[in-house]
Image (cartoon, rainbow, N blue to C red; front, side, top):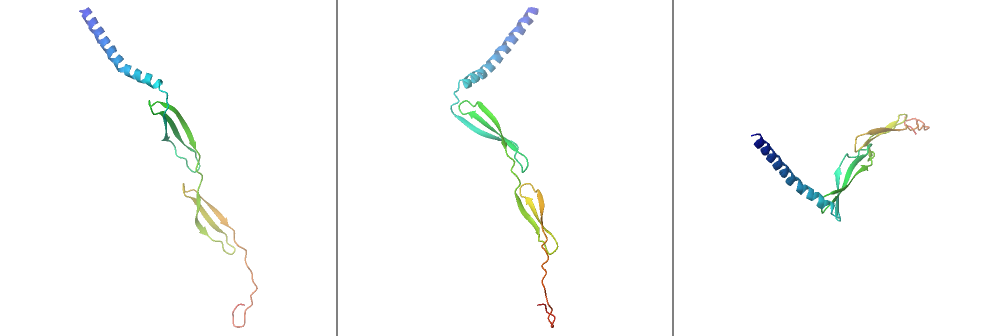
Length: 137
């Protein structure tokens, strides 16, 4: 009885080995075919990464793949430079006699803003005379 169990176990083990070998052989054949490919025709594609902002760099990945066998030939991470702020004037308070004004600039991309002071103009003194009828001349 022990010999039968031993033989049965051996038969099951050999069946599993043959099954696994038949599954892995096509994979090995595909690998052999792709390694013999000349990679004569390639295609390049890009994968999105982090988008650049006004103040921070971003990145994306450029991938080159063989069109014939599908093998990835290269993968390069590319740095995308920060965009920089793009300011527009969004508010203005004009200066008046003795009182400074200001201009507010706001970035159209991120909302960052700053104020610029407009200097107060000097007083413009003029000599005036009052006529007998009460009007200035």
